[in-house]
Image 1 (cartoon, helix red, strand yellow):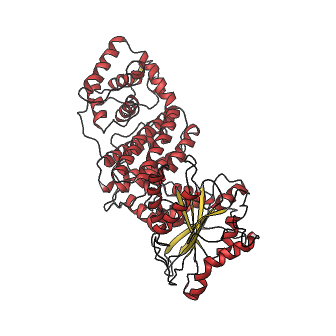
Image 2 (cartoon, helix red, strand yellow):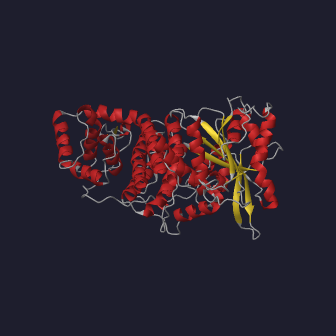
Image 3 (tube, one colour):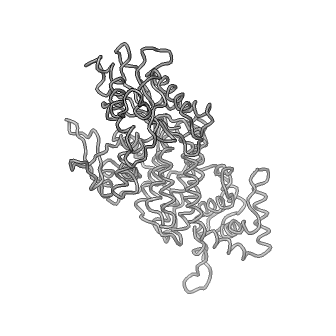
Length: 584
Protein backbone atom coordinates (compact mmCIF):
# COMPACT_ATOMS: atom_id res chain seq x y z
CA UNK A 1 0.00 0.00 0.00
CA UNK A 2 1.63 3.19 -1.23
CA UNK A 3 0.63 6.67 0.05
CA UNK A 4 1.60 9.74 -1.97
CA UNK A 5 1.14 13.15 -0.33
CA UNK A 6 0.89 16.57 -1.97
CA UNK A 7 -0.13 20.08 -0.85
CA UNK A 8 -2.27 22.56 -2.77
CA UNK A 9 -4.55 25.56 -2.52
CA UNK A 10 -7.59 24.76 -4.72
CA UNK A 11 -10.15 22.57 -2.99
CA UNK A 12 -12.76 22.95 -5.71
CA UNK A 13 -10.25 22.32 -8.52
CA UNK A 14 -9.04 19.09 -6.96
CA UNK A 15 -12.62 17.87 -6.44
CA UNK A 16 -13.40 18.63 -10.11
CA UNK A 17 -10.49 16.39 -11.10
CA UNK A 18 -11.38 13.58 -8.67
CA UNK A 19 -15.02 13.49 -9.85
CA UNK A 20 -14.15 14.09 -13.50
CA UNK A 21 -13.30 11.55 -16.22
CA UNK A 22 -9.55 11.72 -15.57
CA UNK A 23 -6.88 12.60 -18.10
CA UNK A 24 -7.56 9.48 -20.16
CA UNK A 25 -11.10 8.61 -19.09
CA UNK A 26 -9.63 6.30 -16.47
CA UNK A 27 -11.95 7.41 -13.66
CA UNK A 28 -14.96 5.13 -13.19
CA UNK A 29 -17.88 5.64 -10.77
CA UNK A 30 -16.36 8.44 -8.61
CA UNK A 31 -17.98 8.45 -5.17
CA UNK A 32 -17.24 9.11 -1.50
CA UNK A 33 -16.19 6.23 0.71
CA UNK A 34 -15.73 8.35 3.83
CA UNK A 35 -15.84 11.88 5.23
CA UNK A 36 -15.17 13.78 8.46
CA UNK A 37 -18.71 13.33 9.78
CA UNK A 38 -20.17 10.67 7.48
CA UNK A 39 -22.75 13.10 6.08
CA UNK A 40 -20.81 15.05 3.45
CA UNK A 41 -22.65 15.55 0.13
CA UNK A 42 -21.47 13.13 -2.56
CA UNK A 43 -21.49 14.55 -6.14
CA UNK A 44 -21.18 11.02 -7.49
CA UNK A 45 -24.10 9.40 -5.69
CA UNK A 46 -26.14 12.04 -3.81
CA UNK A 47 -28.98 13.43 -5.95
CA UNK A 48 -31.61 13.66 -3.21
CA UNK A 49 -31.02 17.36 -2.49
CA UNK A 50 -29.80 18.61 -5.85
CA UNK A 51 -29.86 16.52 -9.05
CA UNK A 52 -27.03 18.62 -10.51
CA UNK A 53 -23.66 16.98 -9.65
CA UNK A 54 -21.86 20.31 -10.24
CA UNK A 55 -24.00 22.03 -7.62
CA UNK A 56 -23.40 19.19 -5.19
CA UNK A 57 -19.67 19.42 -5.84
CA UNK A 58 -19.75 23.15 -5.12
CA UNK A 59 -21.56 22.50 -1.82
CA UNK A 60 -18.95 19.88 -0.88
CA UNK A 61 -16.09 22.28 -1.66
CA UNK A 62 -17.77 25.02 0.39
CA UNK A 63 -18.21 22.67 3.35
CA UNK A 64 -14.57 21.62 3.23
CA UNK A 65 -13.38 25.24 2.95
CA UNK A 66 -15.67 26.63 5.67
CA UNK A 67 -13.01 26.79 8.38
CA UNK A 68 -10.40 28.04 5.91
CA UNK A 69 -12.57 31.07 5.18
CA UNK A 70 -13.32 31.57 8.88
CA UNK A 71 -9.60 31.55 9.71
CA UNK A 72 -8.90 34.20 7.05
CA UNK A 73 -5.24 35.18 6.85
CA UNK A 74 -4.37 32.71 9.64
CA UNK A 75 -5.10 29.81 7.28
CA UNK A 76 -2.09 28.35 5.46
CA UNK A 77 -1.68 29.38 1.82
CA UNK A 78 -1.33 25.70 0.83
CA UNK A 79 -4.35 24.60 2.84
CA UNK A 80 -5.23 21.43 0.83
CA UNK A 81 -3.72 18.14 1.99
CA UNK A 82 -4.05 15.50 -0.75
CA UNK A 83 -3.04 11.87 -0.23
CA UNK A 84 -3.58 9.11 -2.76
CA UNK A 85 -3.38 5.56 -1.39
CA UNK A 86 -2.88 2.65 -3.78
CA UNK A 87 -2.75 -1.10 -3.18
CA UNK A 88 -0.53 -3.54 -5.06
CA UNK A 89 -1.94 -4.94 -8.33
CA UNK A 90 -1.79 -8.43 -6.82
CA UNK A 91 -3.87 -7.51 -3.76
CA UNK A 92 -7.54 -8.31 -3.37
CA UNK A 93 -10.10 -5.60 -4.10
CA UNK A 94 -11.04 -3.69 -0.97
CA UNK A 95 -14.66 -2.76 -0.23
CA UNK A 96 -15.82 0.81 0.28
CA UNK A 97 -16.10 0.12 4.00
CA UNK A 98 -12.49 -1.09 4.10
CA UNK A 99 -11.31 1.99 2.21
CA UNK A 100 -13.23 4.15 4.67
CA UNK A 101 -11.35 2.46 7.52
CA UNK A 102 -8.04 3.06 5.70
CA UNK A 103 -8.83 6.77 5.25
CA UNK A 104 -9.85 7.24 8.89
CA UNK A 105 -6.69 5.57 10.12
CA UNK A 106 -4.49 7.73 7.91
CA UNK A 107 -6.03 11.10 8.87
CA UNK A 108 -5.70 9.98 12.50
CA UNK A 109 -2.07 8.90 12.05
CA UNK A 110 -0.95 12.22 10.51
CA UNK A 111 -2.88 14.25 13.15
CA UNK A 112 -5.37 15.79 10.72
CA UNK A 113 -8.43 14.31 12.39
CA UNK A 114 -7.50 12.29 15.49
CA UNK A 115 -10.16 9.78 16.50
CA UNK A 116 -12.60 11.38 18.95
CA UNK A 117 -11.33 14.94 18.31
CA UNK A 118 -14.43 17.00 17.44
CA UNK A 119 -12.20 19.87 16.28
CA UNK A 120 -10.32 17.72 13.76
CA UNK A 121 -9.86 18.92 10.19
CA UNK A 122 -12.53 18.28 7.59
CA UNK A 123 -11.74 15.59 5.02
CA UNK A 124 -13.27 13.33 2.39
CA UNK A 125 -12.08 10.12 0.71
CA UNK A 126 -13.00 9.71 -2.99
CA UNK A 127 -12.83 6.42 -4.86
CA UNK A 128 -12.83 6.43 -8.66
CA UNK A 129 -10.92 3.20 -9.33
CA UNK A 130 -10.73 -0.31 -7.90
CA UNK A 131 -7.18 -0.03 -6.55
CA UNK A 132 -6.90 3.37 -4.86
CA UNK A 133 -8.58 6.30 -3.11
CA UNK A 134 -7.81 10.00 -2.75
CA UNK A 135 -8.03 11.72 0.64
CA UNK A 136 -8.62 15.48 0.51
CA UNK A 137 -8.42 17.48 3.75
CA UNK A 138 -8.40 21.20 4.52
CA UNK A 139 -5.75 22.03 7.10
CA UNK A 140 -7.69 24.24 9.52
CA UNK A 141 -9.12 22.74 12.71
CA UNK A 142 -12.47 23.53 14.30
CA UNK A 143 -10.72 25.88 16.75
CA UNK A 144 -9.26 27.64 13.64
CA UNK A 145 -5.72 26.55 14.44
CA UNK A 146 -3.43 24.69 12.06
CA UNK A 147 -2.90 21.00 12.76
CA UNK A 148 0.58 19.85 13.72
CA UNK A 149 1.63 17.92 10.60
CA UNK A 150 5.30 17.14 11.23
CA UNK A 151 6.59 14.09 9.35
CA UNK A 152 3.16 13.36 7.83
CA UNK A 153 4.63 11.25 5.02
CA UNK A 154 6.67 9.13 7.41
CA UNK A 155 3.66 8.63 9.68
CA UNK A 156 1.42 7.72 6.73
CA UNK A 157 4.00 5.17 5.55
CA UNK A 158 4.20 3.58 9.00
CA UNK A 159 0.38 3.36 9.25
CA UNK A 160 0.20 1.75 5.79
CA UNK A 161 2.64 -0.92 6.92
CA UNK A 162 0.33 -1.71 9.86
CA UNK A 163 -2.75 -1.72 7.63
CA UNK A 164 -1.08 -4.14 5.19
CA UNK A 165 -0.41 -6.58 7.99
CA UNK A 166 -3.89 -6.38 9.48
CA UNK A 167 -5.77 -6.55 6.15
CA UNK A 168 -3.64 -9.30 4.64
CA UNK A 169 -2.22 -7.13 1.83
CA UNK A 170 1.21 -7.30 0.27
CA UNK A 171 3.66 -5.94 2.83
CA UNK A 172 6.12 -3.40 1.45
CA UNK A 173 9.47 -2.57 2.95
CA UNK A 174 9.40 0.45 5.27
CA UNK A 175 11.20 3.53 4.00
CA UNK A 176 13.60 5.73 5.94
CA UNK A 177 13.41 8.98 4.01
CA UNK A 178 16.65 8.43 2.06
CA UNK A 179 15.05 7.40 -1.21
CA UNK A 180 15.11 9.59 -4.30
CA UNK A 181 11.93 11.42 -5.23
CA UNK A 182 9.84 9.55 -7.79
CA UNK A 183 8.52 11.31 -10.90
CA UNK A 184 5.17 13.03 -10.58
CA UNK A 185 2.18 11.99 -12.68
CA UNK A 186 2.64 15.10 -14.82
CA UNK A 187 6.29 14.16 -15.47
CA UNK A 188 5.34 10.62 -16.45
CA UNK A 189 2.54 11.76 -18.75
CA UNK A 190 4.86 14.27 -20.40
CA UNK A 191 7.42 11.53 -21.06
CA UNK A 192 4.71 9.46 -22.74
CA UNK A 193 3.54 12.39 -24.85
CA UNK A 194 7.05 13.25 -26.01
CA UNK A 195 8.09 9.65 -26.66
CA UNK A 196 10.74 9.49 -23.95
CA UNK A 197 11.23 6.08 -22.29
CA UNK A 198 11.24 7.67 -18.82
CA UNK A 199 10.66 10.94 -17.02
CA UNK A 200 13.35 13.64 -17.32
CA UNK A 201 14.05 13.40 -13.59
CA UNK A 202 15.16 9.75 -13.91
CA UNK A 203 17.31 10.37 -16.99
CA UNK A 204 19.03 13.30 -15.28
CA UNK A 205 19.59 11.35 -12.06
CA UNK A 206 21.41 8.60 -13.92
CA UNK A 207 23.46 11.09 -15.95
CA UNK A 208 24.57 13.01 -12.84
CA UNK A 209 25.40 9.77 -11.04
CA UNK A 210 27.55 8.65 -13.96
CA UNK A 211 29.32 12.02 -14.07
CA UNK A 212 30.30 11.66 -10.40
CA UNK A 213 31.73 8.16 -10.92
CA UNK A 214 35.48 8.39 -10.47
CA UNK A 215 35.59 12.19 -10.98
CA UNK A 216 38.78 13.70 -9.59
CA UNK A 217 37.34 17.09 -8.68
CA UNK A 218 34.41 19.45 -9.05
CA UNK A 219 35.58 20.83 -12.39
CA UNK A 220 35.78 17.39 -13.92
CA UNK A 221 32.30 16.60 -12.62
CA UNK A 222 30.80 19.65 -14.37
CA UNK A 223 32.81 18.93 -17.52
CA UNK A 224 31.39 15.41 -17.66
CA UNK A 225 27.84 16.75 -17.25
CA UNK A 226 28.32 19.03 -20.26
CA UNK A 227 29.98 16.27 -22.28
CA UNK A 228 26.92 14.10 -21.60
CA UNK A 229 24.84 16.72 -23.44
CA UNK A 230 23.08 18.20 -20.41
CA UNK A 231 22.37 21.86 -19.83
CA UNK A 232 24.23 22.91 -16.67
CA UNK A 233 23.73 26.02 -14.57
CA UNK A 234 25.79 26.75 -11.47
CA UNK A 235 24.35 28.72 -8.54
CA UNK A 236 26.93 31.13 -7.02
CA UNK A 237 27.05 32.69 -3.59
CA UNK A 238 27.71 36.44 -3.19
CA UNK A 239 31.32 35.52 -2.46
CA UNK A 240 31.64 33.88 -5.85
CA UNK A 241 31.82 30.35 -4.44
CA UNK A 242 29.33 27.82 -5.76
CA UNK A 243 26.27 27.08 -3.65
CA UNK A 244 24.80 24.46 -5.97
CA UNK A 245 23.98 23.48 -9.52
CA UNK A 246 21.02 22.73 -11.77
CA UNK A 247 20.70 20.48 -14.82
CA UNK A 248 18.15 20.18 -17.61
CA UNK A 249 17.65 18.00 -20.66
CA UNK A 250 18.03 19.77 -24.02
CA UNK A 251 14.59 20.50 -25.43
CA UNK A 252 12.78 19.83 -22.14
CA UNK A 253 10.84 23.06 -21.62
CA UNK A 254 7.77 24.26 -19.77
CA UNK A 255 4.76 25.99 -21.33
CA UNK A 256 6.61 29.31 -21.26
CA UNK A 257 9.48 27.88 -23.32
CA UNK A 258 11.90 27.90 -20.40
CA UNK A 259 14.21 24.94 -19.59
CA UNK A 260 12.95 22.68 -16.81
CA UNK A 261 15.77 22.71 -14.29
CA UNK A 262 16.39 20.16 -11.54
CA UNK A 263 18.82 20.86 -8.72
CA UNK A 264 21.02 17.97 -7.63
CA UNK A 265 19.26 17.64 -4.28
CA UNK A 266 15.87 17.23 -6.00
CA UNK A 267 17.24 14.38 -8.11
CA UNK A 268 18.55 12.42 -5.12
CA UNK A 269 19.55 13.26 -1.53
CA UNK A 270 23.21 12.47 -2.19
CA UNK A 271 23.53 14.44 -5.44
CA UNK A 272 23.54 17.90 -3.89
CA UNK A 273 26.78 19.80 -4.44
CA UNK A 274 27.87 19.71 -0.74
CA UNK A 275 27.47 15.91 -0.63
CA UNK A 276 29.25 15.43 -3.94
CA UNK A 277 32.10 17.58 -2.60
CA UNK A 278 32.31 15.41 0.49
CA UNK A 279 32.47 12.27 -1.64
CA UNK A 280 35.22 13.75 -3.80
CA UNK A 281 37.18 14.70 -0.67
CA UNK A 282 36.82 11.22 0.84
CA UNK A 283 38.05 9.62 -2.35
CA UNK A 284 40.84 12.04 -3.24
CA UNK A 285 43.14 12.40 -0.26
CA UNK A 286 46.39 14.34 -0.55
CA UNK A 287 48.19 11.09 0.17
CA UNK A 288 48.87 8.93 -2.85
CA UNK A 289 46.80 5.78 -2.97
CA UNK A 290 48.75 2.52 -2.74
CA UNK A 291 49.69 0.99 -6.05
CA UNK A 292 49.05 -2.54 -7.25
CA UNK A 293 51.51 -5.23 -6.24
CA UNK A 294 52.96 -7.16 -9.16
CA UNK A 295 51.26 -5.16 -11.90
CA UNK A 296 49.62 -6.58 -15.02
CA UNK A 297 51.00 -7.76 -18.32
CA UNK A 298 51.67 -4.84 -20.59
CA UNK A 299 50.28 -6.66 -23.63
CA UNK A 300 46.80 -6.69 -22.09
CA UNK A 301 44.45 -3.88 -23.08
CA UNK A 302 43.87 -0.89 -20.80
CA UNK A 303 40.24 -1.91 -20.14
CA UNK A 304 41.42 -5.37 -19.10
CA UNK A 305 44.06 -4.01 -16.74
CA UNK A 306 41.59 -1.52 -15.25
CA UNK A 307 39.08 -4.30 -14.60
CA UNK A 308 41.69 -6.34 -12.77
CA UNK A 309 42.39 -3.36 -10.50
CA UNK A 310 38.65 -2.94 -9.99
CA UNK A 311 38.25 -6.62 -9.09
CA UNK A 312 40.91 -6.40 -6.40
CA UNK A 313 39.43 -3.20 -4.97
CA UNK A 314 35.96 -4.77 -4.93
CA UNK A 315 37.25 -7.84 -3.08
CA UNK A 316 38.60 -5.56 -0.37
CA UNK A 317 35.28 -3.70 -0.06
CA UNK A 318 33.43 -7.00 0.36
CA UNK A 319 35.75 -7.84 3.25
CA UNK A 320 35.06 -4.44 4.85
CA UNK A 321 31.30 -4.93 4.50
CA UNK A 322 31.49 -8.40 6.03
CA UNK A 323 33.25 -6.83 9.01
CA UNK A 324 29.97 -5.12 9.90
CA UNK A 325 31.52 -1.79 10.89
CA UNK A 326 29.52 1.41 10.39
CA UNK A 327 32.52 2.84 8.56
CA UNK A 328 31.58 0.53 5.68
CA UNK A 329 28.72 2.95 4.90
CA UNK A 330 31.19 5.18 3.03
CA UNK A 331 32.12 2.31 0.71
CA UNK A 332 28.57 1.87 -0.63
CA UNK A 333 28.46 5.08 -2.74
CA UNK A 334 31.95 4.19 -4.01
CA UNK A 335 30.70 0.74 -5.05
CA UNK A 336 27.83 2.52 -6.82
CA UNK A 337 30.42 4.59 -8.72
CA UNK A 338 32.29 1.43 -9.69
CA UNK A 339 29.08 -0.16 -10.96
CA UNK A 340 28.34 2.97 -12.99
CA UNK A 341 31.86 2.95 -14.42
CA UNK A 342 31.68 -0.71 -15.44
CA UNK A 343 28.20 -0.21 -16.92
CA UNK A 344 29.29 2.83 -18.97
CA UNK A 345 32.22 0.97 -20.51
CA UNK A 346 30.71 -2.53 -20.72
CA UNK A 347 30.55 -4.61 -23.90
CA UNK A 348 27.23 -4.30 -25.72
CA UNK A 349 26.05 -7.78 -24.68
CA UNK A 350 26.18 -6.98 -20.97
CA UNK A 351 25.52 -3.24 -20.97
CA UNK A 352 21.75 -3.36 -20.42
CA UNK A 353 21.94 -5.66 -17.38
CA UNK A 354 24.84 -3.73 -15.89
CA UNK A 355 23.02 -0.42 -16.28
CA UNK A 356 19.97 -1.97 -14.60
CA UNK A 357 22.25 -3.20 -11.80
CA UNK A 358 23.74 0.28 -11.32
CA UNK A 359 20.28 1.83 -11.19
CA UNK A 360 19.02 -0.72 -8.68
CA UNK A 361 22.05 -0.32 -6.42
CA UNK A 362 21.55 3.45 -6.25
CA UNK A 363 18.91 2.88 -3.54
CA UNK A 364 21.38 0.75 -1.57
CA UNK A 365 24.01 3.52 -1.46
CA UNK A 366 22.04 5.76 0.94
CA UNK A 367 21.15 5.30 4.59
CA UNK A 368 21.25 7.31 7.81
CA UNK A 369 24.49 5.60 8.87
CA UNK A 370 27.40 8.01 8.62
CA UNK A 371 31.05 7.04 8.39
CA UNK A 372 33.34 9.35 10.34
CA UNK A 373 36.64 8.16 8.88
CA UNK A 374 35.70 7.63 5.25
CA UNK A 375 38.47 6.62 2.85
CA UNK A 376 37.19 5.53 -0.54
CA UNK A 377 40.32 6.24 -2.54
CA UNK A 378 40.79 2.64 -3.63
CA UNK A 379 37.35 2.08 -5.13
CA UNK A 380 37.02 5.56 -6.61
CA UNK A 381 40.47 5.19 -8.18
CA UNK A 382 39.34 1.87 -9.65
CA UNK A 383 36.18 3.48 -11.05
CA UNK A 384 38.24 6.30 -12.50
CA UNK A 385 40.64 3.82 -14.08
CA UNK A 386 37.78 1.89 -15.69
CA UNK A 387 36.30 5.07 -17.20
CA UNK A 388 39.64 6.40 -18.43
CA UNK A 389 40.53 3.05 -19.98
CA UNK A 390 37.50 3.32 -22.24
CA UNK A 391 35.00 0.79 -23.51
CA UNK A 392 35.82 -2.91 -23.29
CA UNK A 393 35.24 -5.33 -26.12
CA UNK A 394 33.13 -8.39 -25.46
CA UNK A 395 35.84 -10.81 -26.55
CA UNK A 396 39.35 -11.86 -25.61
CA UNK A 397 40.96 -10.48 -22.47
CA UNK A 398 38.43 -7.62 -22.29
CA UNK A 399 35.52 -10.04 -22.18
CA UNK A 400 37.24 -12.30 -19.65
CA UNK A 401 38.09 -9.48 -17.26
CA UNK A 402 34.52 -8.17 -17.56
CA UNK A 403 33.32 -11.56 -16.31
CA UNK A 404 35.98 -11.42 -13.58
CA UNK A 405 34.90 -8.06 -12.17
CA UNK A 406 31.17 -8.81 -12.48
CA UNK A 407 31.58 -12.11 -10.60
CA UNK A 408 33.25 -10.21 -7.76
CA UNK A 409 30.64 -7.45 -7.78
CA UNK A 410 27.93 -10.07 -7.21
CA UNK A 411 29.58 -11.00 -3.92
CA UNK A 412 30.09 -7.32 -3.03
CA UNK A 413 26.41 -6.39 -3.41
CA UNK A 414 25.34 -9.49 -1.49
CA UNK A 415 27.67 -8.39 1.31
CA UNK A 416 25.99 -4.97 1.11
CA UNK A 417 22.57 -6.66 1.40
CA UNK A 418 23.69 -8.45 4.57
CA UNK A 419 25.15 -5.20 5.97
CA UNK A 420 21.85 -3.38 5.39
CA UNK A 421 19.73 -6.26 6.71
CA UNK A 422 21.70 -6.28 9.96
CA UNK A 423 20.65 -2.65 10.48
CA UNK A 424 17.01 -3.07 9.47
CA UNK A 425 17.39 -1.21 6.16
CA UNK A 426 14.76 -3.23 4.32
CA UNK A 427 14.53 -1.16 1.13
CA UNK A 428 18.30 -0.91 0.73
CA UNK A 429 18.76 -4.64 1.34
CA UNK A 430 16.10 -5.45 -1.24
CA UNK A 431 17.75 -3.08 -3.74
CA UNK A 432 21.10 -4.82 -3.22
CA UNK A 433 19.52 -8.23 -3.79
CA UNK A 434 17.87 -6.98 -6.99
CA UNK A 435 21.26 -5.65 -8.09
CA UNK A 436 22.74 -9.10 -7.58
CA UNK A 437 20.11 -10.62 -9.89
CA UNK A 438 21.01 -8.18 -12.69
CA UNK A 439 24.71 -8.82 -12.13
CA UNK A 440 24.19 -12.58 -12.29
CA UNK A 441 22.45 -12.18 -15.64
CA UNK A 442 25.32 -9.99 -16.88
CA UNK A 443 27.86 -12.53 -15.62
CA UNK A 444 26.21 -15.38 -17.49
CA UNK A 445 26.48 -13.36 -20.70
CA UNK A 446 30.08 -12.28 -20.11
CA UNK A 447 31.45 -15.59 -18.81
CA UNK A 448 29.90 -18.02 -21.26
CA UNK A 449 32.80 -17.75 -23.73
CA UNK A 450 35.89 -17.76 -21.46
CA UNK A 451 34.52 -20.33 -18.99
CA UNK A 452 33.57 -22.71 -21.81
CA UNK A 453 37.04 -22.33 -23.35
CA UNK A 454 38.61 -23.14 -19.96
CA UNK A 455 36.40 -26.20 -19.61
CA UNK A 456 37.54 -27.34 -23.04
CA UNK A 457 41.15 -27.02 -21.89
CA UNK A 458 40.36 -28.84 -18.64
CA UNK A 459 38.95 -31.80 -20.56
CA UNK A 460 42.28 -32.12 -22.40
CA UNK A 461 44.18 -32.80 -19.16
CA UNK A 462 45.50 -36.33 -18.71
CA UNK A 463 43.96 -38.67 -16.17
CA UNK A 464 46.87 -38.39 -13.75
CA UNK A 465 46.80 -34.57 -13.88
CA UNK A 466 43.07 -34.48 -13.25
CA UNK A 467 43.40 -36.75 -10.24
CA UNK A 468 46.22 -34.62 -8.85
CA UNK A 469 44.32 -31.35 -9.08
CA UNK A 470 41.06 -32.92 -7.85
CA UNK A 471 43.01 -34.13 -4.82
CA UNK A 472 44.38 -30.59 -4.37
CA UNK A 473 40.82 -29.21 -4.31
CA UNK A 474 39.63 -31.83 -1.80
CA UNK A 475 42.58 -31.15 0.49
CA UNK A 476 42.06 -27.38 0.38
CA UNK A 477 38.36 -27.71 1.21
CA UNK A 478 38.70 -30.40 3.85
CA UNK A 479 36.73 -29.45 6.94
CA UNK A 480 34.81 -26.62 5.24
CA UNK A 481 31.20 -26.55 4.12
CA UNK A 482 32.15 -25.60 0.56
CA UNK A 483 31.47 -28.20 -2.09
CA UNK A 484 32.53 -27.10 -5.58
CA UNK A 485 30.90 -28.84 -8.53
CA UNK A 486 32.55 -32.01 -9.75
CA UNK A 487 32.90 -33.66 -13.14
CA UNK A 488 32.58 -31.46 -16.21
CA UNK A 489 31.67 -28.45 -14.06
CA UNK A 490 35.12 -28.54 -12.44
CA UNK A 491 37.06 -28.57 -15.73
CA UNK A 492 37.65 -24.78 -15.74
CA UNK A 493 39.04 -24.88 -12.18
CA UNK A 494 41.31 -27.84 -13.02
CA UNK A 495 42.62 -26.05 -16.12
CA UNK A 496 43.34 -22.93 -14.06
CA UNK A 497 45.29 -24.90 -11.43
CA UNK A 498 47.33 -26.55 -14.17
CA UNK A 499 48.15 -23.19 -15.77
CA UNK A 500 49.05 -21.69 -12.39
CA UNK A 501 51.50 -24.52 -11.73
CA UNK A 502 53.01 -24.01 -15.18
CA UNK A 503 53.50 -20.35 -14.24
CA UNK A 504 55.54 -21.33 -11.18
CA UNK A 505 52.95 -21.48 -8.39
CA UNK A 506 52.27 -24.21 -5.87
CA UNK A 507 48.63 -25.13 -6.66
CA UNK A 508 47.80 -26.06 -3.05
CA UNK A 509 49.17 -22.83 -1.60
CA UNK A 510 47.57 -20.72 -4.33
CA UNK A 511 44.18 -22.39 -3.98
CA UNK A 512 44.22 -21.96 -0.21
CA UNK A 513 45.02 -18.27 -0.65
CA UNK A 514 42.05 -17.89 -3.00
CA UNK A 515 39.73 -19.66 -0.53
CA UNK A 516 40.97 -17.63 2.45
CA UNK A 517 40.61 -14.32 0.62
CA UNK A 518 37.05 -14.02 1.95
CA UNK A 519 33.86 -16.07 2.38
CA UNK A 520 32.42 -18.11 -0.49
CA UNK A 521 29.12 -19.14 1.11
CA UNK A 522 27.14 -16.54 -0.87
CA UNK A 523 28.60 -17.65 -4.22
CA UNK A 524 26.17 -19.29 -6.65
CA UNK A 525 29.02 -21.15 -8.33
CA UNK A 526 32.04 -21.70 -6.09
CA UNK A 527 34.05 -23.10 -9.00
CA UNK A 528 33.69 -19.94 -11.08
CA UNK A 529 34.55 -17.63 -8.17
CA UNK A 530 37.70 -19.65 -7.44
CA UNK A 531 38.64 -19.65 -11.13
CA UNK A 532 38.57 -15.84 -11.29
CA UNK A 533 40.36 -15.40 -7.97
CA UNK A 534 43.12 -17.77 -9.00
CA UNK A 535 43.55 -16.15 -12.39
CA UNK A 536 43.73 -12.69 -10.83
CA UNK A 537 46.14 -13.65 -8.03
CA UNK A 538 48.42 -15.60 -10.39
CA UNK A 539 48.10 -12.95 -13.15
CA UNK A 540 46.84 -15.57 -15.58
CA UNK A 541 45.03 -14.27 -18.66
CA UNK A 542 41.28 -13.96 -18.07
CA UNK A 543 40.64 -15.43 -21.51
CA UNK A 544 42.32 -18.80 -22.20
CA UNK A 545 43.10 -17.91 -25.82
CA UNK A 546 46.14 -16.05 -24.42
CA UNK A 547 47.44 -18.91 -22.26
CA UNK A 548 49.64 -20.77 -24.75
CA UNK A 549 51.54 -18.71 -27.30
CA UNK A 550 54.80 -19.88 -28.92
CA UNK A 551 58.02 -18.01 -28.44
CA UNK A 552 58.98 -16.27 -31.66
CA UNK A 553 61.01 -18.67 -33.81
CA UNK A 554 61.12 -21.50 -31.23
CA UNK A 555 57.76 -23.23 -31.33
CA UNK A 556 57.88 -23.58 -27.52
CA UNK A 557 54.92 -22.52 -25.41
CA UNK A 558 55.42 -19.41 -23.31
CA UNK A 559 54.18 -19.39 -19.72
CA UNK A 560 51.10 -17.28 -19.10
CA UNK A 561 53.17 -14.94 -16.91
CA UNK A 562 56.80 -14.94 -15.85
CA UNK A 563 57.43 -17.58 -13.20
CA UNK A 564 57.93 -16.36 -9.68
CA UNK A 565 58.68 -18.06 -6.34
CA UNK A 566 55.93 -19.96 -4.59
CA UNK A 567 54.10 -17.72 -2.14
CA UNK A 568 53.25 -18.62 1.41
CA UNK A 569 49.59 -18.36 2.46
CA UNK A 570 48.63 -14.74 3.11
CA UNK A 571 45.70 -13.03 4.77
CA UNK A 572 43.11 -11.15 2.72
CA UNK A 573 44.99 -8.24 1.12
CA UNK A 574 44.09 -4.65 1.85
CA UNK A 575 45.01 -3.66 -1.69
CA UNK A 576 44.01 -0.27 -2.98
CA UNK A 577 44.72 0.23 -6.69
CA UNK A 578 46.79 3.22 -7.62
CA UNK A 579 45.31 6.41 -8.87
CA UNK A 580 45.78 7.30 -12.49
CA UNK A 581 46.19 10.84 -13.68
CA UNK A 582 43.22 12.14 -15.65
CA UNK A 583 43.40 12.32 -19.41
CA UNK A 584 41.74 15.72 -19.37
